[in-house]
Length: 299
Ligand SMILES: [Zn+2]
Figure 1 (spheres, rainbow, N blue to C red):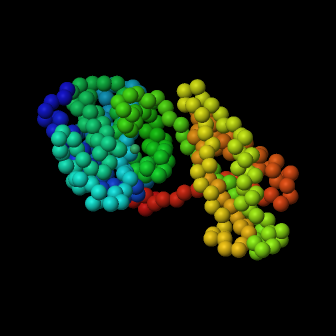
Figure 2 (figure 1 turned 30 degrees about the vertical axis):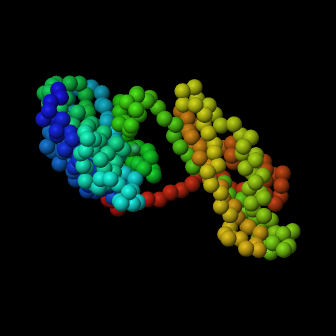
Figure 3 (figure 1 turned 30 degrees about the horizontal axis):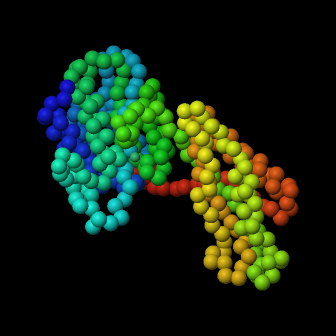
């Protein structure tokens, strides 16, 4: 049941969440706000895992399935506060709207999910089947899915509802993402005598053209697998009078249901192998890109 009192509580909780800045890897303060909300609203228990995700639980009186409501609690940064008409961490209400960094992505949703689950449990006196979980996920903005996986392993939910903005439409799926790095290795030489070297960028140009001929898979609902070149770098850089000995290209691959780490990279590795067999000066490496970030827990 929704009441004026509860409406105010939801709005206040959203404001409290906004007032606790939580850039990726710095979510400790907002987790403390969520702990207090779980206590205040009568959650049965909660825990914080090694990445710093916080997971609250309400158990029904009857056994049944588990539903998990999931929202990330980190936000993108505020590069320039002066460009904001309201303070990014004030949670100001103006003209019926709350302003602040992360309000719609996703502190509003996290506050709403915590509140809705608590009110539902109160209104039915926990006379429902199964268990309800609400999770505040860390490090989503740059490492989407990594911290959430930890929660799935701990909770093993039957259903998951993610509260990301979807124009109030029900979205039933999303493509995943893989970042693939392609490297070519040449031989440096003075650019006055390029014949003495192997230009890694020329080699990369050939590789890129061949990769363009690959056809990524298609899924009837999710669409194309996509394999798009997103950046390219050569070394040395700047390469004043030097034939570049190294070139690195990054590809963004959107992943479909049923694909694996091995199946996604295999066509590229096979292509590289073929190109190297045809050209003894061609040296290519294909791998997944690796990223490292620290959690506020130190993990
Ligand atoms: Zn988001």
